[in-house]
Image (cartoon, rainbow, N blue to C red; front, side, top):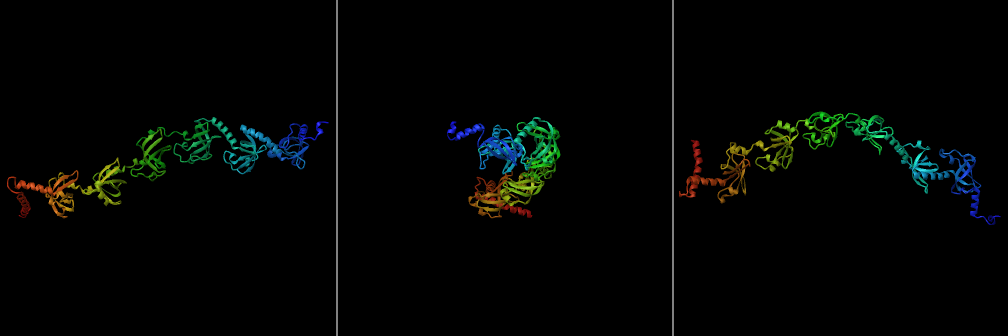
Length: 581
């Protein structure tokens, strides 16, 4: 008898006996073991796993999603042993769990090597779908189903297809897969192959696939190229839909290929003759052409001279008189206009045009119609600190400077008499066409009072002349007087009112009183005239001394002045008597 029979068998002894009976490779609970199908009962397979024990597995665990055929009696299969014996004395086994265990090993290896795995989308859940990866269940986010969002995923369900594993966590039993990365990888391979067969400058046919604001995407047979809106035609195209439609077949030229990003730039206008060739000869400077307004911006308007050739009329070249206005208030889109070529730049493909140059310069027209010296009438448009602006014919303005408002009074005082909207007359003083300025004068309409009394102009007023003045106003510092027979006014200060200091009192005079004075200053250029009563008295005194007395005559100054005054009084009487006779 062996030693084993001498004592009660231990757990280790029992394990040894099992190993001896069923082999070292037989596993226990929680392991994948091999079994043999001994019977098929309806939809259940009865499997002998050894250990004098049998278990039952649903047929669908073998045939799920069309992977394996139903097992046959006598066939050897792998199952997962959960428990050796349940309450019914049967082993608890599972084909699904066995497959899952096998699958995890394969999936982990594929995840490490970034290889594709095959799976079947079998159910839809919140945020995505569930995928059977040969027994292991993975989650497929909705964003990872396709390159572009798809509405109907029905055709993708229950169909074996490749996936990429994005994330794995065996402890939590979590697997995240992507179908999109597989499609992108496949697409990139196709794109690379297609791009390798294309060359810059090549002309090919394509189909318009999509239209955007900035251009159109053209399918070149598996890869898309961008046809930018500026490369559709030589003329201005505001939106690609003006020329192209989705599904249209177009002939395009490959302009540029980026082999790294697989981006292809296409052009249609490059297949046509460049209208900018020899542009300087076609549109010489100063020549005038007829065109159509195609686009209006804040800084001007574009005018099409011919298909593919546009020029810019800057806002400053649109009108002679309308300044600081939006171009849309001068011209409108599709309006036909006459323009003049101002500048041509064939390198930058720019033509500068002028609209106002085709219209008569209003300042030239004004100068022809209203020469210097003529009288014009206009409305006061604005008052400034330096003068008045008057609206004139042809939408031009003229300016009356403060110094040209009145001959005698200061302009700052006179301008207060005018207000906006007043219609006034003025004389044209100067027209500067280049600087677009018109100078006007109001006081010139009344004539220059200095010119009419000046001795140079045939008048009598000059320095030393005795004149009669009328008192206009009496002030503490002197008196304001107007020279008789003229429109000239001047001021006689207190010290010039009399020879004797006692008589230099302004209150001696009254408004309207006539007084004689001597002209002490007459400067036509400076427009100044001064008179003095004192200078007249001094001059008369000298004249009397020279006429009625001498240093050795013995006559007193009083006698001399008395004789002079008597002679002065008798002279008018004698003249009156001569007139009566």
